[in-house]
Image 1 (cartoon, rainbow, N blue to C red):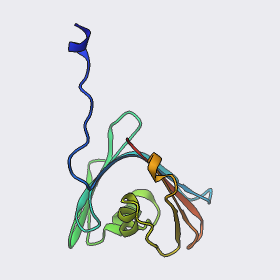
Image 2 (tube, one colour):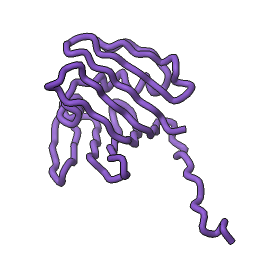
Image 3 (cartoon, helix red, strand yellow):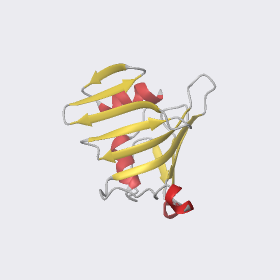
Image 4 (spheres, rainbow, N blue to C red):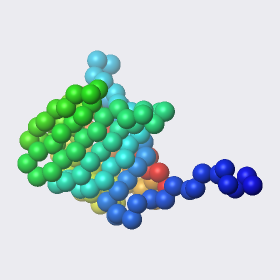
Length: 146
């Protein structure tokens, strides 16, 4: 009887290029914004979408991109750009290594200018990357759902 009320377990989509979890960006400057959110990401650096969620699961923002353009929907407003990097910076307040991030999620320790990535805990679903240049220093932490 109780089993009838139980929620079915969530299953991961079959797509290999799909990730979810939490991410946080801590900037070593009191005047610079730090950023933290749950996320669902699918696709690659050329085409995909990212949904950011608050702790209660409500959508904070959606970002979708394809060759030649990107769209950010936040607070009911739509922002368009030819640059995914520009909208990512608008969303988080910081420059992020978008191309490298997809490689890091796949376990590839590719270099990104000014960033150092630590994939030593990826087996437990954790990625840490530190931006050394340009200042201020920043740390991006990702915890993947398992």
